[in-house]
Length: 156
Image 1 (tube, helix red, strand yellow):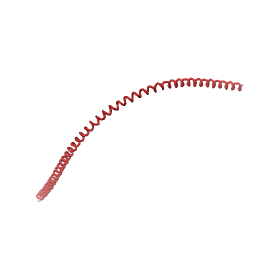
Image 2 (image 1 turned 60 degrees about the vertical axis):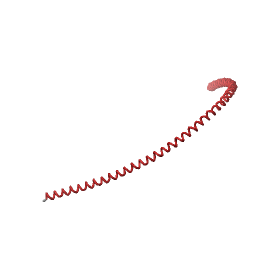
Image 3 (image 1 turned 30 degrees about the vertical axis):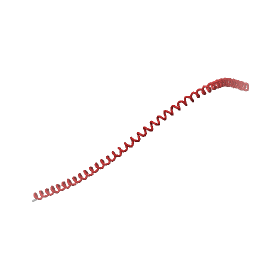
Image 4 (image 1 turned 90 degrees about the vertical axis):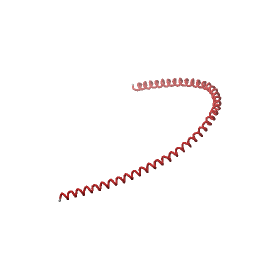
């Protein structure tokens, strides 16, 4: 009898384990179905959003092309106007440059003479200062010599 009880217990354990496994399989199937549904829904949403974005991008591309054409036209007009203005300004600047060169030459000659006179004066002043320095050195040396002589005389 104990063998029968033991076999019955094992049978019950096996049946319980089978029931648990069946429940686990069913739970996994349900989870797998839920995941598939969510994935399909996510894919569908992503495709829908991608299609919307594609439409928006196409509309943006058309608008940008139109804007680009308008900008090209405006740019061409601006370039032609700038070239014309540049030529006019260039002519005016050439005249101004020549006038300034002439004026600069006059000023240059005037100031070269002044610089030469100032340089000469500066050289003369430096020479005079060197002479003054030498005279002061000589005078200091003479005073030093006289002071030493006076000390020698007093010391005697």
